[in-house]
Length: 179
Image (cartoon, rainbow, N blue to C red; front, side, top):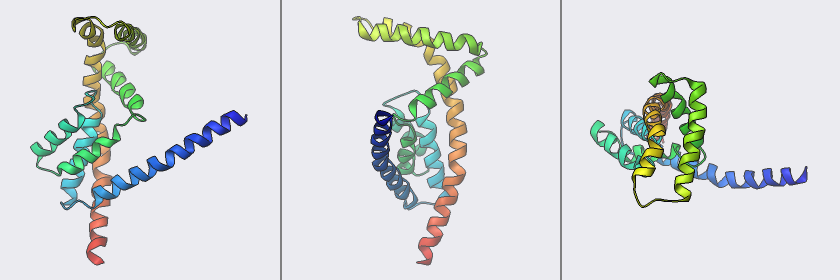
């Protein structure tokens, strides 16, 4: 019992700095000098990009989307912080399930297929081959549902992030004008 409480206490102490960092980035986004719509749409573009399975390219994708939409690029970059090591398992699971659903595959078979593909990928990574073909063959059954589902989950997450962010920026800017 004491070991479990000790582990829980250590995790709680680790979450305090994380909370501070999240608060810092949220305040930073609120202070951006742009219209509430530009900040919120930029943030939504970042959230959308964070839900894609393209690790390493999410910030570039968010910046490109913000540039194309002519909205706040810093807000888009800050919005990508929704995708972090703590949220990736939930995002990727939701993306895979949504992708399987959209592509019309059987969800019960999809879970088994996901485990088999993950095991095959793990084996490939443990014994790397000199060719890229093995990795592509191992990843291809996972990639299509992840990309399709990531687009759907990203759109939904972007919608749900746009309106609260817009309202928060509007209120923050209004209070700032009064002071």
